[in-house]
Amino acid sequence: MGVETRLVCPAFYEAVMVLPTEDSSENARCTQRRINRLAVCSGAGVRTQDSILQRRKGTKNMYDVIIIGAGVAGSASARELSRYRVNACVLEREEDVCCGTSKANSAIVHAGYDAPEGSLMAKLNVEGNEMMPALSKELDFPFSRCGSFVVCVDEEQLPDLQALYERGTANGVRDLEVITDQARFREMEPNLADEVVGVLYAPTAGIVCPFNLNIALAENAYTNGIDFKFNTEVQTIRKIEGGWAIDTNQGVYETRYVVNAAGVHADHFHNMVSETKIHITPRRGDYCLLDKSAGNHVSRTIFALPGKYGKGVLVSPTVHGNLIVGPTAIDIEDKEATATTREGLDEVISKAGMNVKDLPMRQVITSFAGLRAHEDHHEFIVEELKDAPGFVDCAGIESPGLTSCPAIGRMVAGILRDKMGLEPNPDFVGTRQGILDPDTLTKEERAELIRKDPAYGNIICRCEMVTEGEILDAIHRPLGARSLDGIKRRTRAGMGRCQAGFCTPRSMELLHRELGIPMTEITKTGGRSQLVVGFNKDRI
Ligand SMILES: Cc1cc2nc3c(=O)[nH]c(=O)nc-3n(C[C@H](O)[C@H](O)[C@H](O)COP(=O)(O)OP(=O)(O)OC[C@H]3O[C@@H](n4cnc5c(N)ncnc54)[C@H](O)[C@@H]3O)c2cc1C
Image (cartoon, rainbow, N blue to C red; front, side):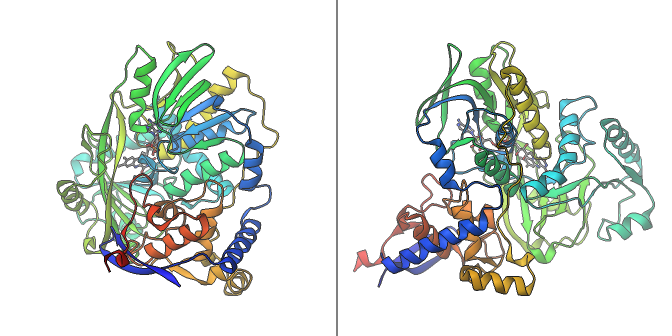
């Protein structure tokens, strides 16, 4: 028995599916699977969601520290803060972590030669780059130190390449090298454009999964005691005795300290409490993402020589085996305008071929855009405000913010530790186990896993070969997925060639079954992004 439902999905198709009706034996099996999964997935030292909830019973809206924003800056700050005994909370207006700029970028771990010598941006870039390999092991997210080339296509610009080398060396970047030997750099990257005359090689550059970096930081902060409140939009911040009152759409929060990690909106909150105003321009970057069949076109990140608007259009492999091409750099006014434009994508396509030849642009599977939080002085602002004690900015975090986030988090937590005299958290557990990817197992291990939990034998996303077991883990782990995009960012279900055409109804069914969310309320990405628009039997 079931209810037939017609879904209208944004992935250009209509699907008819049968919803399971209440069935006690199915529910019982489901509960047992959940219990088994928590046992499998909660690694040694990692607390389960239930134990955390138990511990938090009775907590009121009053904190020592409130962090605004659950992007990489806010989540890294939360994770570093959780090393100390502190009652802290992250307020996020969206339904999940990683819903702002942290989900829409190039995903490069920059070496650190771009930012001006002596700037905070340069310092945190190099530190963040150095911290990333160990962090990726501790928190179990994909990272690869693949290296990068900045390419020069004009003999006259070779001095600019040399200048970049010198700036990088001054910034503390290791092992930089200018290569003008054509045979050597072409052997390393055979698809470089014929015009290339020299490259700056940075072996310490890398690529990372931005979603899993962000999610892992937040998950680890949460399991170490930091609260996260989603769908909670900060509206105003008021000074009160001993701290701050934060008005949100979910009521008032009080806190001694505020960390402002609101991305492109950070100037709004800064200017609310300080007489020294800052201004952030959203600088849009459009991208094309190519199918995995194009993933080996280059093996390192290939940058153009930087210009006035930054690092130019790059071509790079991703940690998941795709090829990414972009971004543009277009200053706009609307801080919510993350839609791509025809002109933007045309620019990406025309510029990409200038440094890398024979790009298979017919292999594009999707496009997207992100907004850089470009502060007028092009510098990270990470400090307690002089005229607003207790208010710590984490503003102007444009590129290389993703790279720098481990160092930004450490700096924010250091400021708070020193100001508040925080003691170490004796229960801090610095490791976290990511979602098990059955592809990493041997054939025998995989067979054993499926024998123990048949959900790992049920493929939900055929493009990325994501199993039901992985999706159930994504839903039930701490700060688990509540929407299709939440599942997608955690497991890659829906990120493949068909862009969720096949797995959308199946993932919805899992969200419905596991969380009891009615099918009509399941969203693509929170808010009003429901997918089911009606029941076809209603028309009969
Ligand atoms: C096109 C592009 C390419 C980039 N490429 C790279 C790269 O290759 N390497 C690199 O190192 N960096 C790169 N970056 C930069 C990097 O992505 C950012 O620096 C980083 O993601 C910023 O993180 P964040 O946490 O400050 O901001 P965000 O991720 O935007 O997080 C801010 C959060 O605050 C929340 N928020 C906002 N207002 C409120 C409110 N009123 N109440 C509650 N919550 C609120 C938002 O919902 C959001 O979740 C790139 C950026 C762009 C746009």
